[in-house]
Length: 388
Image (cartoon, rainbow, N blue to C red; front, top):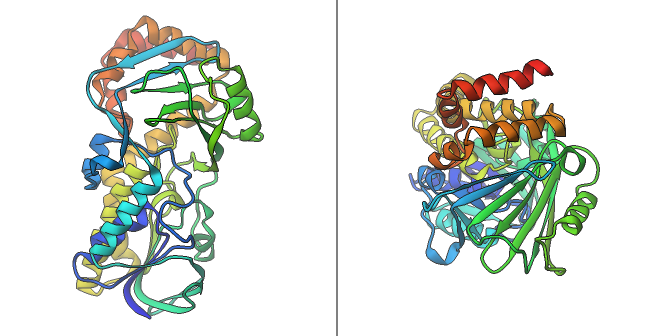
């Protein structure tokens, strides 16, 4: 089985990269261990509208479960910041349907998707050799490999990549009744129940998602306690349960000779919120473009892929990902009392007005640039840091 590009992982990033390459007429094989697209459903499926446009994804109406226009943020002691505008800011999709839609689009572009097939081993020499087992058995040969295997990083480690080290464990459930606005997502902060991350409530049309991530302990225990103590959560039936890991580290090495890493496998996600479809999707498009150029010039060297892939994605989104990681690192160092102090300052300086101006959280440099215009706010934040 010979191809121009083999892709390990049929998630969003693998599918986006595969579509980019296949539509140019190259032979693409996507190796996916699960039996269908969208399995398992690790992600909350909340995506910024601006980000989806940049990635080139235009969703059909039936894939949109809800529109989010605002956010409600709670400090550990219950202080509240509410930022809302009439502008549509983000889309909530049904994740399984979203991934199936991308899989169909990628297959229509000409890529071959091998479901229920596991990449067991990879050898890189004058070509790529992927040993596969499952529904399809044997050896897949290609000129290039895109590794979009996600959080497992098994193949990445076999190939000698240094991958991310910091992550949180998250779990989420869907319930039928919560007393929140249908177009407002909620975030709850507190080291006692969500150390290193946060808890959330997300309206998803006819159901609501409740989730929590933590760097310490069992997130399931913390989530059950959070749901028990939150008076807004009225539903008792859990309609869906999911669990996974979220990188909260700086993005790591993403290429070697003939090999590109894309998505969560190299922490191309937002360490602040955990989202990775938009940022990973941007990198996946760049990976696809790099492969097209490498194939046309028959140059698969590390230097070429560094120039055409790693340098370009870092130029496009790398600074933003580093800011996300820096903010996460800084926030994780705060006590609950210090987080409450930050809320006091933010509320006194009407920080919600800044949040309303921004279309999404994908590019935190926009937020920092707005903050930089308020000297009084900076002085107050600095005072907390000096106290520490």
